Length: 69
Image (cartoon, rainbow, N blue to C red; front, side, top):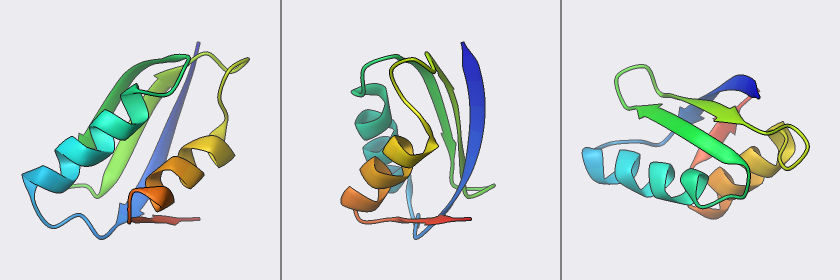
């Protein structure tokens, strides 16, 4: 298992947090997704053989948010 933290722009409410959490936890290999509006970030625990940073970034952007590099 690997842990990764991504910075996310565009979260304005708890609905945004719920939406991003739902999108990320639906991805295969993700065991945990902690999304915080206060820190504008998502910390993910995942199986690195199934997911990577690029796949998370794409999923978040597809949900309408921006990932900062």
